[in-house]
Length: 280
Image (cartoon, rainbow, N blue to C red; front, side, top):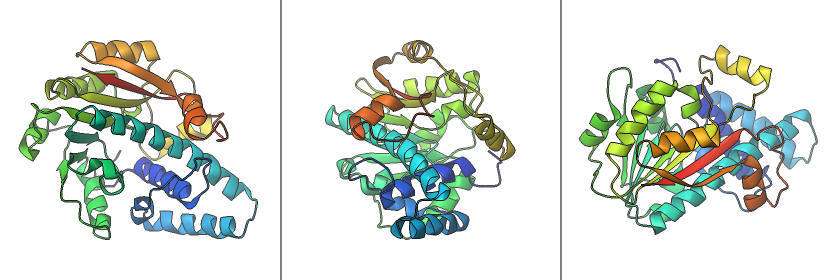
């Protein structure tokens, strides 16, 4: 992403969650009211058009495309939420969200009561988010952690922010590693491992070697946020094992569809999306 502007892909994800919250996804009772709060002005205009057509029960390309987006992002969100709940039930007292973007979990997940949340992200995106978050109730156990990875190490900024490496942590790495080189991913992974007490959980969203559509790849390159890395499940498990994490569960879009949407979601174009859940 460009250093002087908020991440555009983070906005795309927020729009997807807002669409799912509207009821466009096939996930029963999906709820994320924070998503609309975090939409950019352009995002709000596009969302309003879809909402108007949806409430008028109009079938259009705009609505059908929005339903696909709502399913894909909604299922990814639901799968990670489930893994976070399990991690907290197993003793995690801290949650670190790497590349947090416009994540709303600190406000909407009741399971996080008593859990300190650290949101790590680039200052441009985080500053925009903090401005928009003023419209939400105060989240007293949330700490924003701005980081410029070209100049700072994750270990250093988390230490300054008060993260306790002696307490079990749940880490969310959602929608990030596919934008990193393998070397950059490994460097951050080493910092995560060094700050993870026994019993910590790492949730990594990654993409496999399955190719995406040419239009999506071109669009991401055009906005300056191209996806450059992918892993097979075996490669991801090996990378995590190298720093002391053992994968307990690795599942993909088709699995999420069966678990959270009774197989009804429109996700045939996204089998490359996966999540690895690992513990140390």
